[in-house]
Image (cartoon, rainbow, N blue to C red):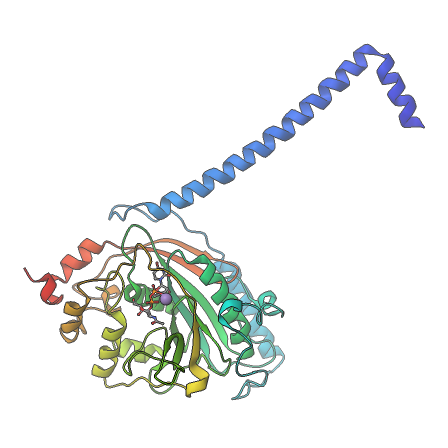
Length: 387
Ligand code: UD2
Ligand code: MN
């Protein structure tokens, strides 16, 4: 009633109704302006981020983007440690009790069996997790050399959080991305990821992981052994003679491997000179053998992976020089590898453009100069590069 009489007074008084109209118009104008401005600012930030991704590497360029939630993350981890002391927890059992074995997961329906639980709610910023009810037997860094496969990364990280929590591991997932326009270099990104993970946490096992490899059996434990481990025994990409999932050749060590700090360091990590697709995996196998180690695999049915189908990436073209580079793998093993980023006369320069502790993984954006690296090692690149 009061509202009606108020409205009548407003209509009968010309001055008042004009003022009211102006007030309404100004408010609407202000609301429109504020929403337009915030959309614009969001857009500018987005463009700025994309630009920084597209910037060419330049020696004099400083790191332009560093977002860090690390302080918060450290607090959480410290808190969890205090909790486990207070609750005097027991070590987690040797065989995790919640494993189900072969997953009800198939290629067109990859996420169905992994999204219906609370595992994602338990993940800490940076894609990190530690069991709440027991002391984990191992601490694993999952390192994914990565570029521009966001849909694969989303599937893989959700899948891993689900399974690695069932495996009662302390773990963290890292996506190491190479800034454009440089050709992709999987080995170099693995090395940088390994060093960064060591800087970030106390890991007993380092798993170098393709972004499109989805494990089909949760008994495939992401732990290390007394020898380097190739966790893949078969992939939906390859069929054997009797039409089972298999591997293309016996010395094939691609997709997912697990090594301790000392095993990785003893082999001197991956070679850094394979730009584009291919070669770095066979080279790494040679390195492991020359360092007197041998890859081991889990049982056949445990190590089957789904390979998410994909096209060839435009910035990861087949490297035509890869066979020549592979020929002189032995000559390069001790002069370039993971030691190229530490103390080394032929040290490789790189930039960390960004570090983000994202919700389900830690993301690193790396810039390198392909021409400079190739020049540095020109005498160690085999026939196609010989002058
Ligand atoms: C095979 C190997 C892989 C590697 C590669 C040769 C298998 C299961 N995997 O993969 O381990 O030796 O041959 O280099 O056989 N990536 C991106 N964005 C890109 C390009 C590559 O994220 O633009 C990453 C991603 O993690 C991917 C991996 O690099 O899984 C390997 O690249 P690929 O998937 O294009 O090559 P593919 O499937 O032949
Ligand atoms: Mn692939």
